[in-house]
Amino acid sequence: MNVLDAVLELNIAKEFTSTPGPRFIDEGKFSGEEFRQTLLKRKFEEALRMSVTLRIDLDGGYGYGPSFLEEAFGGLAREYGADLVRRTLTFKSDEEPLLTRDIYGYISRAAE
Amino acid sequence: MILSLVEAPAEAVPFFVDLLTYKRNRDRFVDLSGVRRITPDAIALLLAIVKFLDQNYGINVSGNYPSDETAIEVIRESGFVEYLHTSMTKPANASGQIIRQDLSVDSKKANGQFAKRLIDFASDGLPAGKLRLKSCYGHLLECMGNTHQHAGSFPGEKTWWASVFRDKVRGCDCFTFVDMGVGIFNSVELSLRLKMYNLVGWLKPMILKKLLGGEIPSSTGKGYRGRGLPSILNSAKAGGLQRFVICTNDVYADTLADDFRSLPRELRGVVLYWEVSHECA
Image (cartoon, rainbow over all chains, first blue to last red; front, side, top):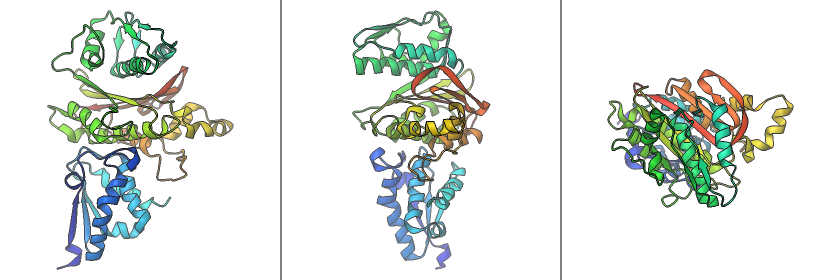
């Protein structure tokens, strides 16, 4: 198997919630922090172990606040470094195409 | 009068400030007989204030309806009557829905289920359905998070109301978010910095403009925080919203028209209003 072609999938609406919440756990349910801690990190580390890409599917839910996305993906970059996160993650967002650009911005600016 | 924060803020803000100037246990009467036009933002704020006075100070608020038939119909269609004891009946297929923080579900927190209710209501029966309103869902979550974090002296102290009104005549959905807190300029974070901004000659309308433009750093000192309101403005500028208005304390901003100005009276809290075209996909 070609490593570059191998992909792990994470569909947020199916595996976490279709109604994402705020930034932090203490602000409300299904927060970006909860998503990162309970699901994203585990999948991310699994992708690292397998040397494959982790494709995040953002479609199918009601939408996302920027705080949720920043805390999830920016938070991941603060923990693992922006370069590694950028190299490991790809995104699918047919319903809101600009989200992908926003998320890469959060990853790049995560350490500010 | 025109009772509308969006269309006539200088007229509407004093009306609401007077209503909020209460005396404990003294009942109030809201005279709407002179109102010839009322908009959904004003209806949501009126309801929020009436309930605030009742629940926090035991003040019973009664009132009459406008004499203008169209204004009465907007009130009837808005969802206003669901929360009040009134002889006015709710239409079977109302154009509007108003929600409040349901403390029995999730105490004073941001909750996607609340935003979902408005999005489901607004998207029902329209071709683009929920896809058209995905960014609005995010805006509502950001507003709820701001109320939770910044509206009071501690997280979760203040509550919010939100509404959507399907304006079939103008072909758009009108969203209103009412933050019943202290307002942006009285928030703990910004009030501490106001003197500094005044020293460099920034007046409040300019400060709000810079805040929305992401030019005022978050009080957390973390550059990646404080992106909620700027993200709504960015969405508006990118064509996702056809109007985005903020009224907080004594400042009004019709952002896409670049109209930032001071108001004659100071309204507590924050009212955010935006419109999404039914054609927007």
